[in-house]
Image (cartoon, rainbow, N blue to C red; front, side, top):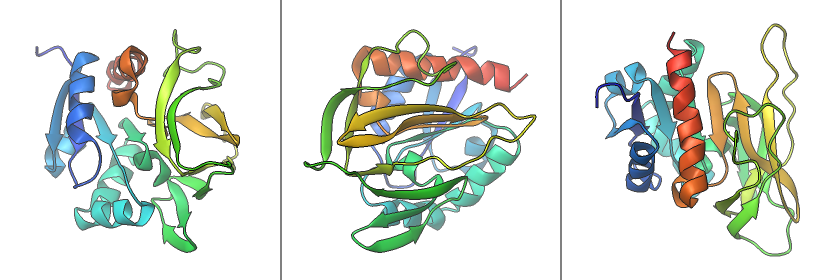
Length: 216
């Protein structure tokens, strides 16, 4: 269908990419798995998946100059959605097993090991959606599927006028961590929408619904 927003899923060798494409299609997008920079730049939305180690994801992104691509899209106000480690790399750095790795630096702060008695955090959990969230509109009380041992446990970006304040969604597992962030054209989820059943499809549909507004 030509009226579906075009969403590029960045293919750089990391992430549950085929499940993400299928979920985005179900949510109303024309989703395409691609490593083509032109398509990824021109698409209505770009999804950055990611699984595994922070350092490995960053190395894979840089190998295709994905870091430059993401930065260029955001500088032009073009929507980007990070998933799982695709959210984590948006921060300044990741600290895993004592190793510090530089991230994309779109948000200040570090991704560190969760403060929980049992790791990894695997399974379904509820979230505390931030006030005014578009991603979680109508699904604030749903459960989402997490698989991770690391996360962003603090938020340090100060609101800057005239830009809208970031919308922060938190989850509790041992201690609070960020489950999702909505910050202008950049949004991200620590959980996997593509593994979160109907709630995940609705969240992706909410994000896709904002793409047409962003392109106006």
